[in-house]
Length: 407
Image 1 (cartoon, rainbow, N blue to C red):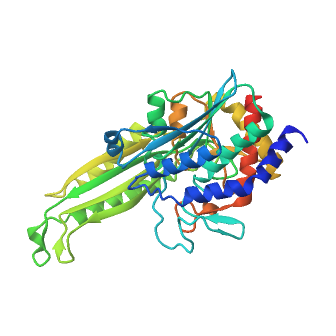
Image 2: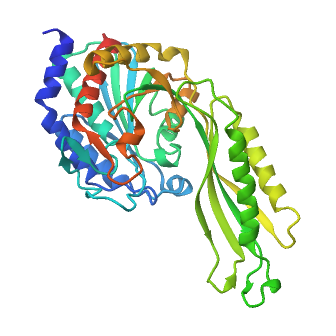
Image 3: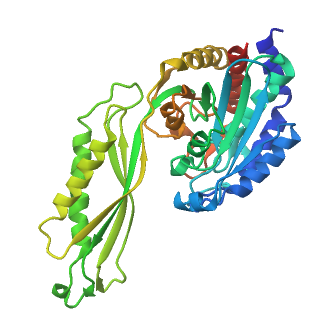
């Protein structure tokens, strides 16, 4: 057998162990919010120690974690140094959105049925804790590299933008890789993604008894006018097209609305949170300025109404750096050999914390265990799941890719 076949054989021989590792990771909740994720890092470090992979624990100061809207963050770094040469970093995040309703499997059970593993983060992205860890184990057991380094980075704030995960580690120079691969969610190699602007809009009126509505100022009616103006913008966005394959046009969503005190009370305050996805060609500052103008113009002319607009998150789009070519070529080559089909390089409408590496000048791509499309994985929906065969094959692709990059 050649080295690639030996890597594949090692992964096959240890696959049951890899699945058990993923099950243990799924069984420790990491709902974000609230974002009390240090306990998961402790468990992950314990499991990695059992494989001989020692993790550095980088605890982010509580004040910085709270400022980011979370409760506790411990980032993990595993460094494997083989000799002189470039450092390749593999990054996966363990934080997840809360399970929500509609599950037919325990969201934190790691149950296996019909060749699939179920649970929150089974597909995005605790699965790639196991993809990356077992790819490194296979590499060391079979190829025994003598050049370069691999670093495993496991973080816990991707859902909130990555600023106290990769952002914090880059800022404090804890990590300085030459190339990086981030947790994936489909067969594709992702080289670009949308940006994201999230804002909270609070509309203030004057509360009053519903029997005498003219004595108050209805904040909900004002909010409806603002929402209609925003949704009108959403119609216009469809006329703007991205040139990046896999990305279509900008769009806007209002995901949370709160307000009022009771059925028989004119609401004096209504707030809503919006999510504006930006294609790579857009200027984030201009996008935000336009939204603020649309909101203020919709609120104008309504006596007694005031509006506050607060930015919650600004995540820039990921734009490919020329230095990502070795990553793209290796993953595409081995992906085609392992999966038996062409692995395209393209963009995604999602946003991730990989942009932070690219902004720091570190070429990166997104690739890991996942189905052909994000939709198939049920990510952020009930019964999130991952085909175990996809996990096995993605691990082989990463191990083979590392062998090429460090060879």
